[in-house]
Length: 436
Image (cartoon, rainbow, N blue to C red; front, side, top):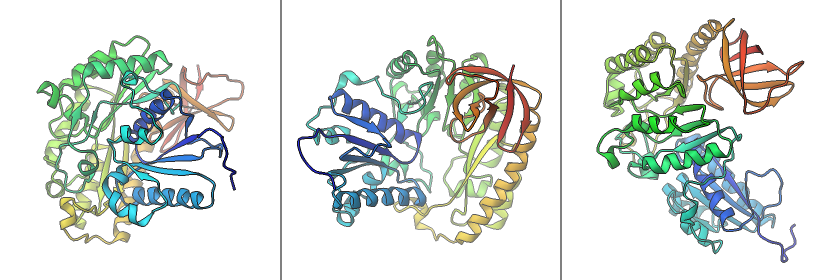
C-alpha cells in the first residue's frame, strides 16, 4: 500500500476507443501540463496516484472494455494503490447517472465537452492561450487533427450524436494554426479526423468546405502527407478529389465508411444513399484519383438483415474490390432508431457473416498486394520491432492498415524518415521490402 505524505500528485491518462478520443486526451494532457501538473499518457511506470480514464461508448465491446478499465482502477483505489479516479469521454457522457450508482468508487464523472470542469478538480484553469498547441502521444512524425466535432446524420444504428452532439466545424485558420505547430514539432504526416469530414464547413461557411481546408493545409512547409478519414458517402464534395489529384502532399487514400452494400439495408440504416449511387461514387473517385486506396467499414447483422441482403453485400465487396476493409457486428444501442427494431440476427450468424466477408477481403487484399511486388514505393518508417523496421505507404493509415516490413540486418533507417523501398514479397495484409 502507498504511504500518503507530501508527495506531489501525478496523473496518468488512459485512453480507450478511437483516434478522436486520443486527440481529446492529448488536449487534456496539454492543459494539465500547462497548469504545471505532473501528467502522463498511459505511463507504464506505476507511479501515478490520480487516474483519468477517457472512455469509449460506441459499441458493446468498446463499452465493456471501458467498464472493465474503470472497475480495475476502482479496485486499485480501494486497495490504496491510487488516490483518485476520474472518468470522462463518451461512456461517461451517455451513462453517467447509471454508472455513478454502480461504481461509487469513482470520484467524478465528466462528459465529452467538460474538460474545464475536470481541470477544476486540480485547481487548474482551461488556458485559452494553449489552443492550437498540443502534446502528441503518437510517434512524433505523425499526428491526428480533429477538424470538427459531433454529427448531424440520422443513421439509425449510431449513438455518436447522443454522446458528441451536433456537427460543429472548426475554423480553417484554427486548424491550420494547430497543424503548423504540429509540423514545427516534428509531424510529417497529418491525419484528418472527424465524425463526418464530408460535412465539414457547412455550419461555418454555408458550403462543404473540405477542399479549401485541404488546399490550405497542403501549403504548410515541411508537411509531407495529409490523410483523410471518415468521409460520409452521401453528399460527398467532389471538389475534394480535384485537390487530391493535384496536390502531391495529399495521400491517395480515403477512409469512407459505407456500412452496407444492399440498397434495402442502406434505407433501413437511414444512410441517405443506395448501392447504385455508392458504386457510381466509387467509380468516380477512382477515375479522378488514379491509384487511390479506399478504406471502408461495413456492419453485418443489423435488424432485418436477411441472407439475401448479406449476399448482396458480399457481391458488393467482390465487385468494388476495396484496398482496405473492416467489418463490425451490429450493436443494439439504446436511444437509437434501430433499438426500436428487434435485434433478430443471432450472434452466431453475425460472427459467421463477419468471417465470410473477411475471407473474401483477404483474397482481394492478397491479389492487390501481389501486384506491388517488384515496385519501388515511398515508405514512412514508423518503428523498429524484433530486428525489422516497420513502415507504411501512402495507402496505409497507422494501426489499421497494411505495413511494410524491412529487415534491419545490414540496413539502418531512421524512425520518422521516408525510404524508397523495393517490394520483394507480400501477404494479404503486409508487404516485405528492401531499401534502394
